[in-house]
Length: 93
Image (cartoon, rainbow, N blue to C red):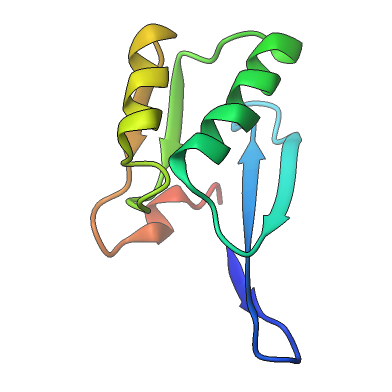
């Protein structure tokens, strides 16, 4: 998610939700996210909650990064990307 503050600065929010329990596992706000930032957050969550089988995400560069690809490979996590230009594919209904 992203928004613009009153002063014009853009903010992004990384939202991690368990699609089965619908529990919000993380909400992290920053000006920008790199793949390494997402990997660090997911590594912390994995230590606390266990490893997911699949992560559903959009086509943002933080998710398509080499860091994210390596993390998913070494942790045996499948990345399920939404169709390009269709972030609504991630909607949980």
